[in-house]
Image 1: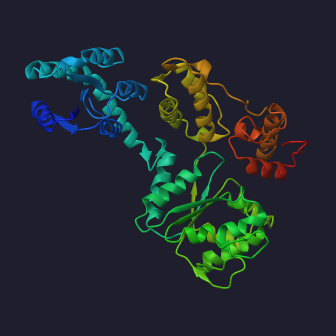
Image 2: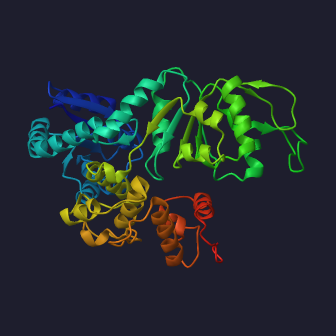
Image 3: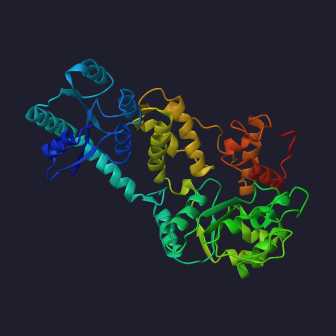
Length: 451
């Protein structure tokens, strides 16, 4: 396998001499001349060895600590003059493998590096294997080995190069926005940005202005002209999340945009034409809402040109270990932890849970687990669930709405009626506060002082 060595030296001649010493058929040698470039290189590539001169501009011993905190897979070796041997020894205490005084004994240094490469061979192969698996199971930042998700990836590839409207369906927390981002990123015909709007998070009175903009003086608080999200997304993609929460009046205006690709700002007379791909997402049964006259049938048919259904996590359990390792690695790096693995007991606990909040809930639980884990291995006791699956009886099989009503009520009771915030019911349920309010109204759950 191809291995890489990074050389940092403030002297061009020294850099080139070391490059020629190690460069070969199975070794790539990169050279840099300052500490900032060292960190960037170590983050961008997997190096087996980094040879760093203590005289490199910007270098200090804290960098060695940073490399270890970030779990960057590199063996660091120090080059120094005789005046800085004390500093080189301190570097070894912080995790550097060895140090060599200048002028360097080239043959001895080569032998030491070859020994390090031999010792690292297994570790390098593990890193390479992880990279291959990550690439194999990753599609535009969506991680999955599930055949059902791979079918979704194929649909994304099929629709990405078109301008067709897409409707993404799936439960809360399944990653519908990730699918929308993947469609946008995979497209070669979209040069603009992807603009996201959560239709449930914007008050009904402001949604029209948010989508289509307004002119100065259009209403009392309109002190200046404002471009809407459709205008900002011109040439790109607009993602309408929780489209089922959109009020009927706004649905009518949205239908015109889909049909005519034009609209007027509130209070304006100039017709604005846009070239925007619309991707909508919902966790609701829009067919049922069409029958109940709470969602326009003509809009539904316009949105449902290319439907994509994202399966819940409980129906693709083979993804749980893969996602768990990913989230533990992400949160460990972010929080400065050095968690290297997940104990089998913790994996079993994750596999046996039903995941009503799907991937978002998995991420939340693993972030909490990483925070409380004191060592290098995430143990079973670190995986704690804030809620239990809904109770069932042997004689009574609850409907989906009954199960959801019970689950929401349990979360509200557990948080003492607090809906928002880091310890609120919405966080426990893996949804935002506005969505929770909407579901409570739909399911007839009494507020009882909930805040």
